[in-house]
Image (cartoon, rainbow over all chains, first blue to last red; front, side):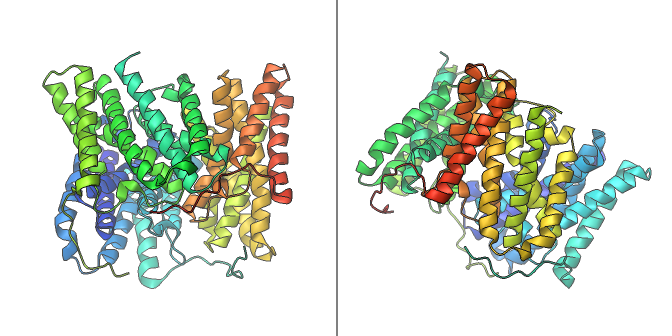
Length: 207
Length: 207
Length: 207
């Protein structure tokens, strides 16, 4: 199995866990868990494949992905209520999913010889859209837009690093690892140390 | 006309009615009714066609679908305020739309000889996504995630039945009918008798 | 450069400005601005290209669009807090974006010799979906559904005019100009003079 396919599997598994955790917070039943797990797990990669016209879409050609996401949903269904702080677990699992999926997205675009701009965008899209769909559907405040945290920025930096690494002649594995590590380090730093980018604190908007 | 095309027409009509009813609850104007009716009517099937790379998308090749949805919107626009409980009507119409669309989605995947997992997923996708888009755009609580009701589960069970029926050698018509009937019976049972799957009532999430 | 490509560039630029303004209202950081600007700028056109099976999607083949949207985001990031009423600016910029994008969408469908129904729908889709995604992701009340204002109706009327103009033998430039002007005039009239279509003021819905 190629490194890229492995990344897809890992990202599907971790995103599925986060989707099931959100389903747990919304007190859905088992099928609701599976639905949210699958939506979150394959959402970002599906948009990537549609945009790049890669057919069949990765999970249509290889239904294993769906089975993995469903299995993750079942496990979470029977264990999530045992977890002390599901929100903390969710945020940290999501940080892994973001990093792995950003690398998978950037790698897919690189393997199609897309330009640097598209590689960065595919990293951001694949990394962020699954979680964004999860939160929009469940009416949570999207993690992707939480104020005072790095999120899109992490995927951006990771995918940008992947472009640089490719230009410098790194092989595929090193490129993808650099992307995932930089993305995750920034996200973790933001969660633990409060790293952030500056914002303009404007007056509250009047409507 | 094939049974599959007939199902697509019926699902478009009934989903359009539900979309227009939601527009009525949001007090939109006539064009808003038509927009919501079309979005709801073709949303699920469009995602199905994009995922399966079926081009042209069903309503692009056959604009009749759009005209039907628009006609439904016009009828609802002039009559919805006469209905005593638009919410009840909405929920029941939606149960028919869900069942018909789940059968249409599963049937499309079966006609492309997709694997069982994909057939089930296409049934769920086509059945649930139109209504989900309708509710997300209009800021209603998505019916698909309403606690204590079967919804995704019905589409899942129906599509699963379609896979079994095909394996048993049923012809297309019987397969699609089984899918729609099982889906609708479960949804109706959930609405009338309160059938549901168990959930874990965890402590309220702390943030 | 063809008139159609020029319209795409203009619509990307103006939609990107509106996306960045919404990011400013949500107090996101610079990368958040760029994300919202890109999502809004290419959202509608991307859906149009996927539906019509035009590959590569316009910004995948021509990454300039993304650079323009990002540049717009940077400019807005450093200037938006100086604006007295960002909401007013947003609404008016959005009216230009709506009109230009509706023309771009209708023009793309016309250039593929699609039927009149599809031309109208592509005008509405391209015009409205970018702004709809922007508002759904940022939890704003979608402008597209704001009660008592014309919005979808403007894109509808503009795209309808484009169909008529083509039938009457107008050339491409005149057709697209007619579409954009009619759309914008209706939207501006609705904002300034309160033009609207009638709605049924039903009793408040009971749930």
